[in-house]
Amino acid sequence: MSKYRNALPQLSGRLFLTDGGMETTLIFHEGVDLPHFASFDLLKNAEGTARTRAYYERYIDMAKNAGVGFVLESPTWRANLDWGEKLGYDRAKLAEMNRRCIALMAELRAKHETRTSPMVISGNIGPRGDGYRIDAAMSAEEAQDYHSFQVDVFRDSEADMVSAFTINYANEAIGVARAAKAAGVPVVISFTVETDGRLPSGQTLKEAIEQTDAATGNAPVYYMLNCAHPVHFDDVVRAGERWTSRLGGLRANASMRSHAELDSAPDLDIGDPVDLGRRYRDLRKRLPQLAVLGGCCGTDHRHVEQIAFACIAGDVAKVA
Image 1 (cartoon, rainbow, N blue to C red):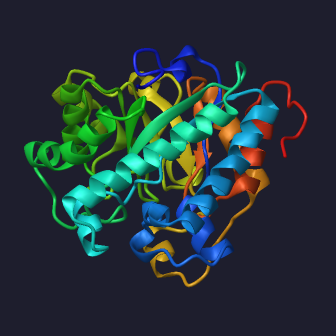
Image 2 (image 1 turned 180 degrees about the vertical axis):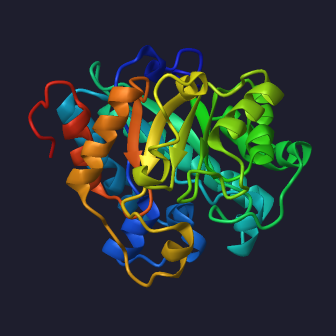
Image 3 (image 1 turned 90 degrees about the vertical axis):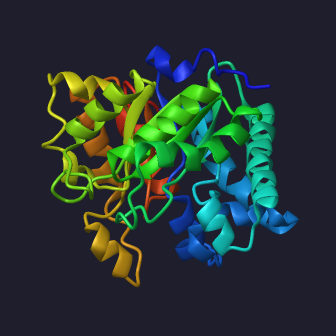
């Protein structure tokens, strides 16, 4: 059974950390072969499961040492039907891998959760296509039907919520949100933007959030931004604009490069972790409701450490 599905603790205003760029960390720092960026595939054997467990525990320790909460985002960003098929998974086996990922998150919570560090399990959902570009846009109805597969698996697990990350057009966001609403599971939508602060669809972030809210009856409990550096959206999220109150979390890229540049780059640009932490701090001064903080492409424990150090009130002792 889920623990926090009916009362998500990150909605209380307290700070929660989450992890960094899992896939880029595994590929570039640990030398893991990760076809199609599919980290869930690691759980097919004991060695990959142990590596995944160790990855999360490094971030969990940061949260516990800092006395803040932690969101356990499951490694299921690529565990949908189309990407699963490319990796040789049929529907039944893919459902089992999604359940296995949530079970690992539940194991980590049971082992590490404390009173000062509540741990929320989120079933992570990625886009049907490429996160950087729109391959074949779906209608909202098609997106709901497609993403219901993963949502329904998470509904019947210990997941407290579902989160859709790197969503680049509104209809897919609407479909995920409707699927979660129908399943009775809290949902978070995280959009990505280009260097001009607009979604790859060309829509503004404001328009995408307002369209999703209007089409779903405000189904998302909050929105996030991911897979973009703060310089790409800093001017967009101005304090005082009503729609920005719907933003509840941030998982930025380490690099200031565009999506196209990142996609073609042979190297990993880790940017400046200290600068990134300061940018998070400055954003939270304008948008204090940003409660869930982590990283995306190119970020690792160093970036999340600096984010925590910069954003925790009073700059408490540096987390390890």
